[in-house]
Each structure stands twice: as structure tokens, then as C-alpha cells.
Length: 417
Figure 1 (cartoon, helix red, strand yellow):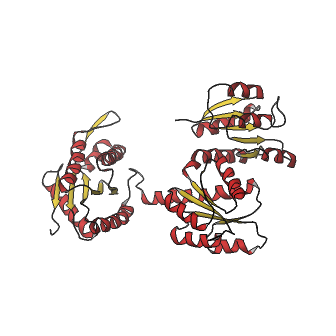
Figure 2: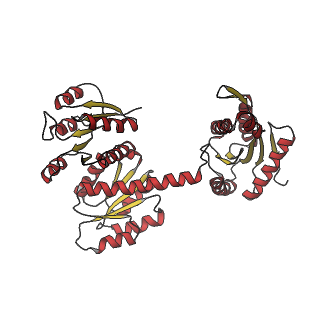
Figure 3: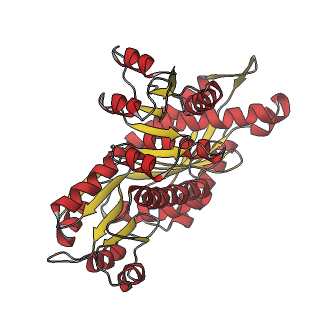
């Protein structure tokens, strides 16, 4: 569902640029150029996810549009061409998402960054740890303006309990001085449980001692803020740390994913399958390991072209997700795939593989008005206690037998083959 963005700006060129930014982020954009238009729009039934608000409008020269938007519960980013300390303090006295001076093109890049974060921050949980309810509530309010999912704890011991109970927490903001377990102790414990690419830690303290920032960092924190902090610095530090985690996640995903099909790649499959096999064998979980191959794939490339071949690979991956989606699925390279799948028993597992094979065999894959018929062959091994490399070898031998026996079939391997 598309979210709506209200753009309040009397300059048509600037409104156009902001509108383009909104559309690039899949917002439905509504533009208003005066406070009177804003009031008229907000009297309707349209719900807005956020607004960009020009501080000075022809009929509202001192930020009156900000109050109008906020009174309707719409988060707002203030855009201003007038930047002095009085204007800044006036803007910050209101619960806005942020303000941006309209100084140069960087302002619009920063606006895009904020709006993108606003759309996605609900996916990021932030745990605020402070024994002072007033200090805790202040940070919570700042985080909620930025649409984060927020959790609270009054000391380090309770913080560890919250982390065990709640998934999706990406950041912990912790005060230094707290009963039972202080911020340094909590940071030390957190780093035993969560590496830096999974959890960001920001220490805060109102103490004058300048060594506290170093103590936090040396014990595993990623950043430090001294109280009282200004909202701009707080948001810059929080946003930077969340973006660092997201960038690392994207890099890891790219490193572990086949770029064409979106399935796991060879390296990722081997790592994941080793871990899963140990669990399946330990708990005597019924499973199968299968290698599969698109029959006569070179002929598809030769006859229809490599773009058609890529399209076939993507479609086979989609059928794998449909029938085998709860397993570990991978493209090992070329037209070769692998799957590690659990189920009730060997018959049910074989049935899932065969359902996949049969649906591929009757599908008519359409590419540029060409109808392409495809079949797959599979080699499978069930409930083996042997190492992964040995099982892959046996499944590959079975796949070879399926090919030799006429293709479009499943061949199985005994554990002692």
C-alpha cells in the first residue's frame, strides 16, 4: 500500500524536486502552497504518513504550518530558507522529525534519506536502558518521532531479559550509572552475546569524566553521547549506526545470495547445510538432500538465447520456493541446484520433490512470445549420517543415474552406495 506525503512549499521548483523524491520512494504526493490550502486538505479524509513543511509561507511566515500539521498527528520535516539560532530554537521547540536548511542540493539528498528511514525504521527495534524514567521517556519520544519500534528497561539485568524476549532489536542505548548492572557491565555482556554486525550499542552519560566515552568504546560500544545532547546530534548518531547495520546486512546478503535467482549461493548453502545436518542427525529429524539439474539446458541457451536461459533459471527457482520453500534452497552454479528438506518421513519428502518435478515438466514457460518446455532431473539421499561432502557426492551420483535413465525423474541413493 502506497503511503501519502504532504508537500507544503510555495516555491514551485522546490516543490517539484521534493515531489520527485517522494515519488521515487513510492509516496503518493499532495502539494500545498499556502496555509489555507493545508487547512483545507487536512479537513478531508486523506491520511498522510508524513509531511515536508516550508517554515515560511505567504500566509504563515513564522512556522504556523508546522503546528497545523502536527495537530493532525502527521510527522513533519521542516524545510527552511531562513536559518538563524532563533528560527532553529523555534523549530526544535516543536516535536518535528527534523529540520533541513534549504542551502544546496545536499538538503534534498538528506531529505530523501530521512523519508526513506521514516518508511523503514519500524523494522528496527531500539532498547532504551536508563533508571531515570524522565531521561528514558525523553529518548523514547525522540525515537518514536523517527518511527522506531521502542522497548525500555530500567537497568542492565532487565535489558538482557527484554533482549531474550523480543526479536528485531538492532540497537541498545544505555545510560552509564544504573543499579544491579551499569551501562559498562551491560555493554560487556551484550558483546558476549551479539557481534557488532547484529547489534549496535550507544552509551550515554551525564558525568563530567571524559574517560567514560573511552570505557564504553573499549568494552564494545559503537558510539557515545554526553547528556544533555541536542536532538540533531542524537538523530545523526542513531541514524548513522542503524544505516551501518543495514549496509552490513546488505553486503552479507549479496555475498550469500545468487544474484540471478535470489536463492542461496554455493558458499552459503554449504555453510547452512553443515549446521542444519548436525541438528537433523542429532534430533533424528527425517530429511533429504537433493541435487537437481535442468535437463538439456545448453540447448535452451542455444535455441532461445541466454536471456531466455536466465528466465528459465528464475522460473525453476520460483517453483522450488513453491514446493520446497521450507527447506534450504541454493543455486550451486550454472543449471545445478541443491535442496536440503525436512518432513514427516521419506515418502512425504519424495512426494514433495516429485510434485516439484512434475509441475516443472508440464509448465509452459513464456519468454518473448516463445513457449519453452523444461524438465528437471534429481538425485536424492535420505536420512544419512554421513558428512555433507559425502552426501553431496552420493546425491550427485544419483542425479547422474537419473540423467542416464532418460531424465525428468528422481533417482535415489542408499547411504552405503
